[in-house]
Image (cartoon, rainbow, N blue to C red; front, side):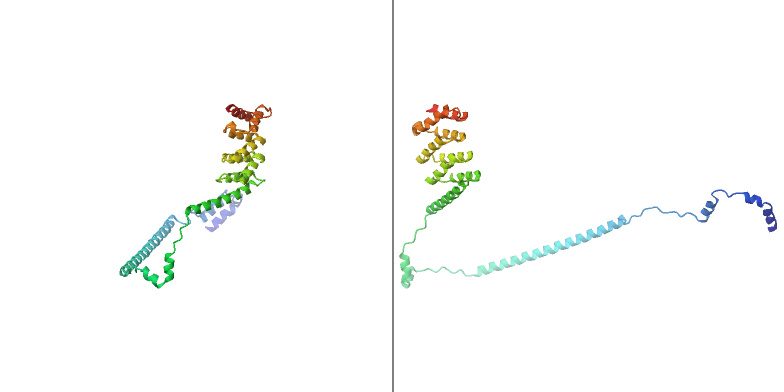
Length: 279
């Protein structure tokens, strides 16, 4: 058997040498020898949902238990405090009821006077009268008026701020009466302040006490020397409320001059005409 196979191989050696191995034969052989390993591509979660749910349940149970225990402890503490408070109040009431109320001792003034002559002399002295509240209120008001006047004067002398001067004039208007110093301050501001609003505020403050003869005279002098058209119109309106007989001749002459002067602004002329027509 071996000899015949060998003989056949030797006789056909050329045929064997000329034949080529089919493509893929080696791969097929290796595939049969080493079968492919199947890879499980299933993705497993790092933390399964069930485990998370179990952990959350445990946390919730612990929290509920702690909360319940804390509430019970708090309620017990409150009940114990309330019971102690009630016991203390009951004991105080009992002690109070058991106390004997001492009757007031009657004082014999005659007996006291006999024992202490000084006491008798003091008893015969008249009792000082209670201070009058009206006088104290008046004193307080006068002190406040003086303080306000001092502060208002300081504000009106502020040459850097028109708002401060306006604040001072507003404070002056709260004064019940104007003394000569206040009248002079307001007249000076109404006549020569660089700010029109300050001038108008000063005129308004003077008008508040226009029945004062000195203020009435000052208002006329301010009008005669006034060069601000806005203030002129305001002064004309104030003077127009009075009778012509209450004005001096200079005021009437100034009104006529304003109506004829070509440099006078129209609204000032109209106001002056209206006052002259009423006279």
